[in-house]
Length: 377
Image (cartoon, rainbow, N blue to C red):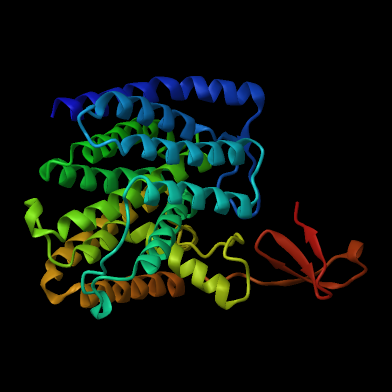
């Protein structure tokens, strides 16, 4: 317990006192997130909050993880460093999606090869149990990359990604502590301490954003946590087994994970790049309904807790039925929110400066009937 208190408290202090310095440096160097037609904020805001989260997490973890644990922590640190440099470069200079993807594969490879984090059992999902080694590697790579990006994609309004990361890391940390997985518990509570401090500055109205540095860090850590959680929870010999462990793990991450899977599927079905930006995320739908940033964050947190409770109540129905029920309810809720949004207002006007052409005002742009876009002042 001393290690947990040390790591969590130290992470909070480092992040809390580093964020104001980062804000000042970002202002001096003009390292801002510029508003555009897709983003929801209207003012320039520093994007290097992830640097403070990383500093708090890495120092606290290095000091809090006891030297007696198996020597896999160093490999987690190596993977986290890869993610950190990907994120910081993207926040400052912009990094192409392909390069980010390759970097994430490298980090995931380190975690699998040297960290021993691997999905080698489906625990009854779709009737499957043990799976071949090659399929196990591919599935684990896919899982790590998807979860890593899910927190990056859900980071669209003030306080949302940080709040979700705080919730998931707290749950995993408590479980790891209860099952005597001290290294993972220290890592989880180090992240918790950093996120609590960060949210003081990020909850609406935000003074700073976490950027890719922070969201990718939260994602890569939660991918490790959930795979380890499923392995422990499905093993009766480790003291605290849970029926349908994969479904409960899915429920813990359901808001960012289901939203990402849904949005990427839509992009692929419409023949667009999975990395192409749009406004199809759940927080965009809630914004269209008039929700404030604070209300969106609290609603998503409440919804996530409700899904965890549902997964736990349905755990005896089996992994497959539990996951299908969670997915079905999620899809139903998203559909209701989507179709409850106010319709886009379209009106036809005539402007002399456009040679009397009919134009359509839609969203933030003016489109002529010929398809030419004219920026709206």
